[in-house]
Length: 109
Picture 1 (cartoon, rainbow, N blue to C red):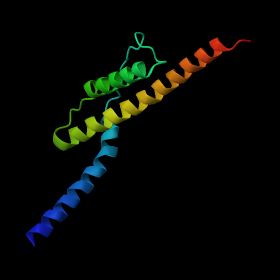
Picture 2 (cartoon, one colour):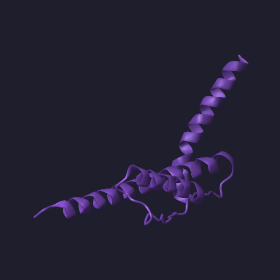
Picture 3 (spheres, rainbow, N blue to C red):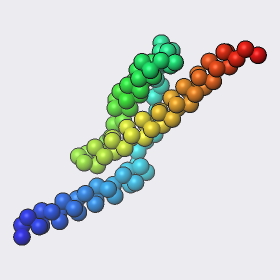
Picture 4 (cartoon, one colour):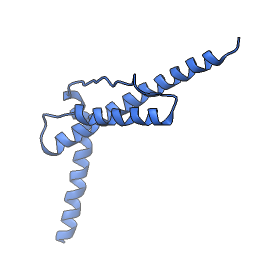
């Protein structure tokens, strides 16, 4: 029977953790960061991969939390994910813009 109580406790703990992020979103201060890409050629896979690595590194270093223990870890993880998602959308738009400019320059009209 003790084994069953451990399983029940673990299930309750997971359920509580899943309920934490929405509450944390209300208390987190907004964060932002600038990432330089002037030295990168975004027309190449290497340039794009380097920019993605920079985004990951900046998100990991920028997202902190004043909350302790598990709540702080959840908060930092959520912040990093949100920052990386936002950065990825911005990078995608930047690459599309870059590709459009490159295509327009190649247009023989």
